[in-house]
Image (cartoon, rainbow, N blue to C red; front, side, top):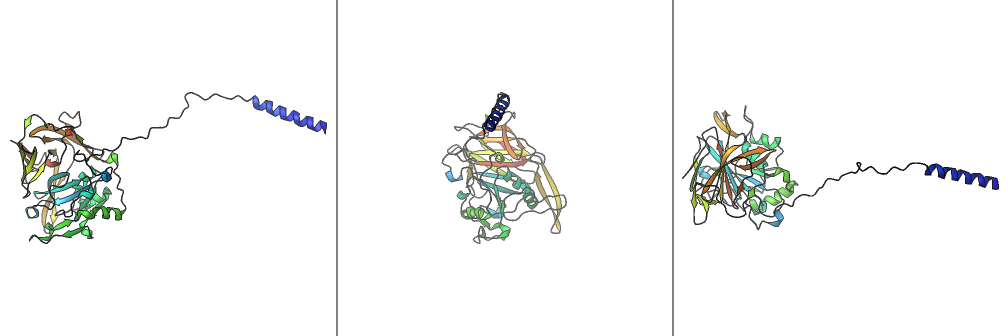
Length: 350
């Protein structure tokens, strides 16, 4: 028994000595792992379209809405015009202009908005610059070389609400003696419910939103006078006229049969393309914006300046005239005019 115990102790000693003889390497100073920082800047608590404080806290970081509103004379004055944060306007076809109303807080859209009209590619794409839900009533279809609004919606997987599908979100106002296409309305107070039922993402994606930059205090847009602004979108359209009022410091227009005022006017000159296709036994000519970028004007506080702009990674960038710095605009509502740089768009000032 003693011999057995002695053998066991000898084996244990040998194993311990073998283990201790193994070299233990110190960790290399070049093999450390760096964990990238995941912190991001907090989202601004002001209205991202107007720069104004007092924005609904529940709407901070929530996707906006973009609503297509028609602009033919029988549609004026449009229901709730002047309530959106931004109005975008340009030609769609046949010399007819149309509008896109942007609201940063879709719970603030009035109970009755309209007349709501159909989707056109330039407006679908513009809504994507701001990661917005797109609201419309109908849309254009592919026709020979023309790519329709519905195709762009499907291609870009745009989350949209369409009046053609009916539902409690849309209706008609029969108080006006005009044709039905001028009476289609959106019940703005039902937007939140409709989006919730769809189960869509409501959180704003920061990298899909075209952030605007604002001045801390009211600042002249430039040094050149701009008391009167006339914007003709192309050689085929009428002219949108704005007058600066010293009393409130805003640009007013009565072209929509009611007084609507803006702090800022932004005109983007863009290369456009006309596409003529057969339509209902005749032809129609659609206008497409290429969004190639270019020059334009920023107008505010009775003054103007030349600007540059570009679309990159599906976002809109507004820059100073030399293209070196981001453009800062004054806080308040804005009008964005889409004018043709190659098909007779003209901007004049007085």
